[in-house]
Length: 290
Image (tube, rainbow, N blue to C red; front, side, top):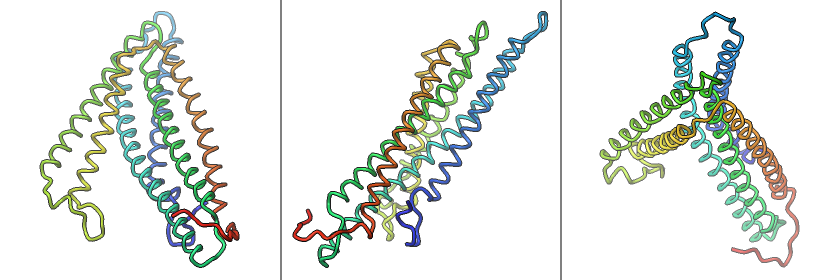
């Protein structure tokens, strides 16, 4: 349900930020599919090689893997930033929606008109929070599955498994380089900040330099999480079978998180139906909490 439909605005689901997040997610999933397919194709090629024929060189596999990893890392970083922006829009939208409900409820009380009741508004507020928490859980599960797909791509079977560690080392180096750049950029922008830059503009928004610093801070934090994740996986050096089991387990957790999110969205929809104009009822004698 688009709560702002008819008011000249979009709901959070149809905002430009949400659309940008969807496109970034689709790009990540496409690259992840290529990564998985490339790993399977290489393994199949090795297994079906005729006796006496040379197996594909690991150097060729490593070059292809690294190129995909570079593209994958950039796409995932972009998705992480798009998620932050979409999350900010969702949370601001939910907050504005509940505040509007409370204000309208007070206005109805003042006019002695039908109203929803504090309990209905509280349920809508609670449902919005639960849906947001479930959304964040799904995002975390998606990241976990993507990590597992990377792990599996680097975990070749049999004698080829040595390239797993090499592939992960490359990921760590890439993540560290990205973190170094993000930290340097943040430090430079922070050094240029002046007291006047901390003062919001006439429209209440942060100054241009302040916005740039906040964006650099988010870039740095995202790069830091990425670096820590890569280093944690470097220490695991799983076998192909172990990596496959890890991927399957991550896929299962994602499915569970998606089910929780679906239930949370259903409850949010039902709760918001209770605070439609047509749902207001006579509540004579009730005193609403301030």
